[in-house]
Image (tube, rainbow, N blue to C red):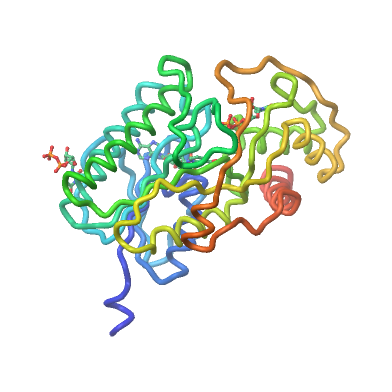
Length: 318
Ligand code: NAD
Ligand code: UDP
Ligand code: UDP
């Protein structure tokens, strides 16, 4: 009976998305009950299809901008479109999802005394003037630009988390996620990794925005989820924010060359205009995550790309 009483009831909002579905997998494998809440804006039942027969898994269609009354022990709040194409599709809804969604999930956590984690983002640093980005850096965000609905929504969500912590003593955890890739990425969300892989597999030109000298740091999804779980298990009072990402930094040109090589593609490179407010560089300083929970990414970019290429090949080019 001991095992039964130790089983946690964990709510994952955005659980049918890319990261959320991997998190659900890991939480179930660790012996928890998982309630996955999603409005299927960018996520899909396909991502959790393999879990639907699991008696410890429950899928609920719900929009987090509306109140949610359930009984849970822990909450991971991931609900929010993450790619520029998706979050700019309905920017007002994006801000509502981050801000009202956070208020509702914090209200829920307050009522049931649940520990709650917020999936924040490296975008809170905006187009950073400090490189690499430590958690102390306050960021450089254009409040009225096309990325602001996402960036400012996520910044306000962090504010709400810390105010609920100070005002209502909530047990919060805030992680700042840097670019992450892997199987179950949305094929048409315009993200650089999925775009390049699909273009390479189709033999179409690889679209580099701008001169391709801008940098990003790419973390393989399994490494990131390990970081989620370890941080959630740190003692109460350790709130973050904490950076989670892979410090390996690459230009988009280097990424394109890697993808072409790993897919053995004949694709050429085509330059397109750089989107407005596109950050020039991004790399996490993960010293805190290393020191606090002995966490660092283990999957090198080439290996993670191989696994992601295999996924896209199997799913869309089989
Ligand atoms: P995703 O789009 O695959 O997942 C987001 C999920 O949230 C989707 O399933 C979507 O349907 C759901 N959703 C959106 N609005 C909702 C709403 N109002 N109510 C309920 N569900 C809603 O994206 P992802 O890459 O898995 O991102 C998950 C979280 O991690 C997001 O909060 C994102 O901001 C954050 N994040 C991701 C990355 C990354 O590189 N993937 C980087 C930084 C932060
Ligand atoms: N809320 C929710 N589920 C709950 C408890 C609260 O969705 O189990 C929502 C509630 O609708 C409210 C929000 O969370 O709008 C914030 O709740 P809180 O108790 O902090 O504020 P108040 O209800 O006093 O506005
Ligand atoms: N990018 C690109 N070609 C693409 C898609 C994206 O060159 O087909 C660039 C984009 O301009 C940005 C980087 O790749 O500089 C990462 O873009 P993504 O949308 O994946 O993530 P974010 O900008 O949110 O970090």
